[in-house]
Figure 1 (cartoon, rainbow, N blue to C red):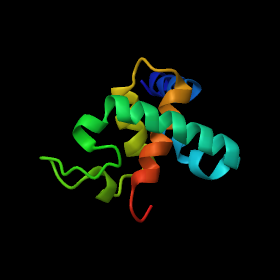
Figure 2: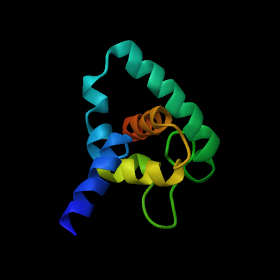
Figure 3: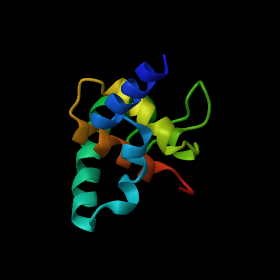
Figure 4: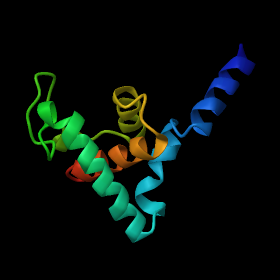
Length: 107
């Protein structure tokens, strides 16, 4: 059972879906790369998420405060993005996660 768990965990990280893949995204990117990913992330977020969250994540939700006021961990953001964008390339998932992190007040 342990071997299967380790293999599954390895697969998740190999495909960029593990929380640590997104966790370092904010601090380890060059400025130009970060800006490029933020632009991609914003475009995808507006297309797929803004209906419920608003473009800046300011729309209150039935389940709680607006996205911009939540204090989600990088892992929580990664899981949410991976679920909503499960068929998207890893770069797009990373871009959306980076954009969502940028919306959080008091990041």
